[in-house]
Length: 444
Ligand code: URA
Image (cartoon, rainbow, N blue to C red):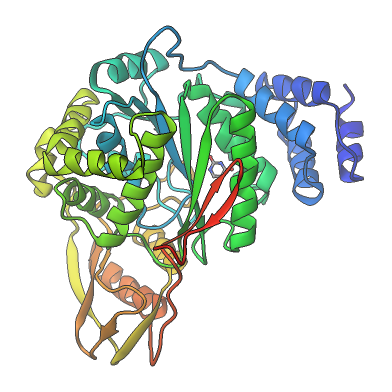
């Protein structure tokens, strides 16, 4: 295999052969292809795209680069959810124990914060002692015992993605539908799933803001899943404002626990239930959407979902006292109330600015080695469309010190726009399956 020729071929808009992708990914994972050649090829893919056969070969090669979680021979129904990333998106923390409490096994494999978006692993690690780096063997044993494990990408699962992802992150090659699809689906398809639900974000805070591109991403991932025997459904959800009120790792854990107590913000609960309904339906754990919703609601109101979350925390070394006492979580050194600058209707709560501000406060990474401060962030109690009066408290800033309060205030000044009139995009706009795209905007 002459790699410069493959790069030229792709650069000039031709398809590589499936066997080329297989060999290339195998050799790259083994450390026999240098990053600079792979980076050049990735950039050619960003510009030229991949054919269906190339995408299939790339995804299969990435799956084959590692091991798989396997539930073969067991009667377990296994489902997972993946979000394409957002701000304030703590859905996984609620959804995994809720679905597990309905008798479905959930091997939820999540990522860390990326750019302005938060990551489930960073949120979980805000819980003192919580360990996300379980091996495949440990995760499987925990799933069989409790019904759920909340883990990171182990070195054993899709190691090719781990290397490729780190390379894409620093070479401007993240925003590519085939590369994102292969990356997400190679990890998910290695989990031994009976069904997968995708939460594809759209709007200014999403990696692919335009709905048409988000729908194309969803359809690409669904086709990959279905062709590999994993029924896959996607919901397109709004990321032109943060989800819920809390943005920041420890604050989001606290809000997730409130949600499991049936006291979460309506938008967070709505998205969580909608995704949960799809998960139960996909694996045949509910008769219809109404039945699925009732089962999930009963898991919350009975306290079973919260209890399951407590068991997961304990099993993964975390302090389960957090369930009853949020003071167990890291606490910010400085807290200040933020007030509306003028009267009117909230037009924007810009998630990208909020996410960047959390990174500035120390709650996200600028480089891989950065230690994050889990306590910092915002609780924003207004949404686009809400009416506010000048001086009314609309947010709280959680920072390390008074300098953080100053930069957090400046970020909210930019992110929260109050005008005469606001525009509200639907929270859940589309449902996408292998058979088509259904608009939900009118239906809800
Ligand atoms: N999440 C992933 O796992 N991979 C991508 O490429 C983008 C988001």
